[in-house]
Image (cartoon, rainbow, N blue to C red; front, top):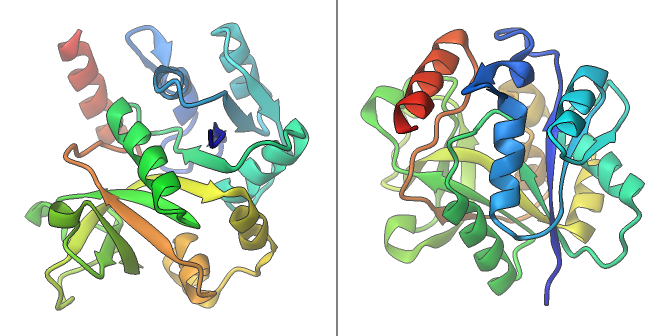
Length: 245
């Protein structure tokens, strides 16, 4: 049986929403909501990877597992690789990078990502959903262009990631969801590569993979999770989660 672990990179340094991981919804911090979502998949062990003592202590206080990393990493992927190395677990074959600011991601989507990536022997795989018209020009919503219709086939390779899609001539443009699963050997290769010009210019680290001919598979999700990037996002998610309860 293929062994997968879930790592959640988290830091306090978000400029648009200070102290984001510790913001409370229903008396629980954002990072602990995401941690508990990872645990609910029963895929494997879950750890928060952080260089901030406040986050580390918050997770431990919630009876979670956390790994203390260097404070300054260029990307969340670099942070999870350090955490993986600290764990010294030789039997791990895949690592899921679960973003610490998407508490509404569906458990079934995380499970489906893991299962299909293993089934197709993906180097890297991620999720995407329908792109709403209101988000075509929204730079905070990352888009992915796929080679095929993932609503129909559930699975395709990514051709391009971008922030604004209004001038793109393709039928297969989707709303990218910030979760990845990496084959461990590919993650090792990825973090050894220099940041590409596209990655730096567009602030999208997945472009480093495509620029170095590493394939990224895209799996369709019926749900549209909301990431927490601004105070408005936080208030919207807070309202949704409190309403559900």
